[in-house]
Image (cartoon, rainbow, N blue to C red; front, side, top):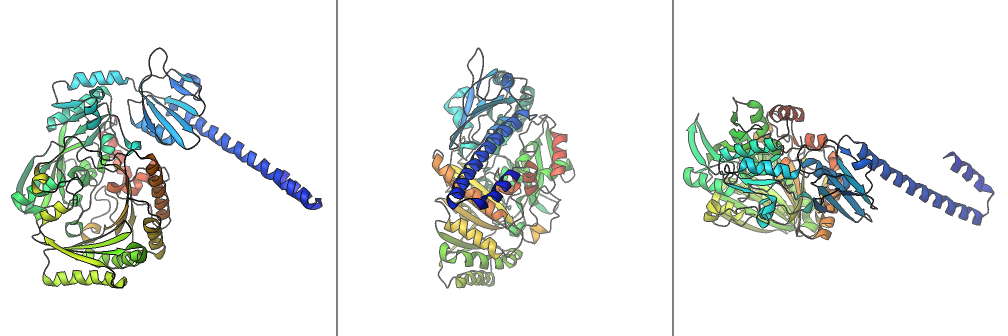
Length: 620
């Protein structure tokens, strides 16, 4: 700085041409200095990774490709990850002993997750190799042998990596995004709680992690991230009883919402406040304290949870409720996939099923009227949410914005109120909306709200693919809004990114998250962390799984939109819509957890007590 200052002071005696040449030289030196600085920062970053207590350099060096002396090196390859994502992917898989990362021109990258012992590095430009500083004591082949021997004859269906196409189908969750595609050591389809117990015990003895999978719809595929996937979709028991003046329904954790709703309606005339999509699993939604069309009527799904049956980290079958294992019961109401166990049964309070639903829907041009529609909808939302008879939401897709309201068992007067609210929004657009009405039963409405093609009552009750299907690639996220009425800056940002700059196959959903039955529950009474939210901005990007150019475009838009929302909203998200790289957390895992849960310290304490070995895959 002092040198450049002195040279600038000498510039007064130069001719204009000398000054121009001086500036050119100065800029060249500055560019060279910047390039040197960036290169040194890259080296510092690599050295920082090497010095980390998590990673070490094979044979004392890391600048090159990972190699195994004397035998072929076995690895799994993933494209287009950052180096930190590659390292994180290896860290989370106990069968991974190290990773190799190559970046070509800053545009393409490969991440190789090595499964066999790495002995040395072969020099290769643009490539680094790191091994775990504290590697697992067993190799992949050893763990496979232990699992095979332990599970043999004890579980009805198990699939291993050498099972070819069957393994490729069995290991999937629904999101086909390449960066969250996992390769478990085994997939067990449990037919009973006993088989879940057996699998957990075998996983513990083999030293591998476990994740539970039910509907497989979690947006970040966390249900498929463990070394062993325990698929509980066959656990579909159902039992009704009346106790303490309440309807109780006990059901297996393998139910999809359509299956459960059908049984509750057909056998008992009941309902519980679950999700809207009939093909989505009940277990993940309940554990995440999910929302749905009846959330303002009966509260969030976990607020109706009365108890669970679960398998703990020792493979022991236990129960938790308001009197027994209270910490685990607290955790199960909003802790989502971080729950340190596998739930095999839920018991919920059920309610009388609405007889008739009245729906009214209007669509508008989002470019011309999106801002006015959102603003008017939000200004009426507090009153609508307090009525306990209505559900409403907005959807932006394909250049249109859709405003919908549903009234449950409404009188003529209540229907008139709903029409008044709809008309107020329509008037704000100078009556440009195209509106339609529908009337039907609860089950008929569920059949219309399908993701997976469950389009008949018979489908809802019986149809269930043996393994999850790849439904294309998705990026999702959600920002909680703490006020009923949005700021003009938030409105402008939302319209700009969700309408003006929206890529193809982008959708935005605005759902109410508040209301008396939700906010009146004390914030720390459950693990769910969004009691003070009023509504949520939920955004979804979809594309063909194999289209990498679309992935890059969608990823860029998601990050830009999310960062723009960060400027106007607190760092609060909804676990069931969570993105693994929630931008406001800035890569800090503790900040990510704090954005989604009410008491992270309590969750970590329970996790340490219940799962000290980390048997169940978790961000905790």
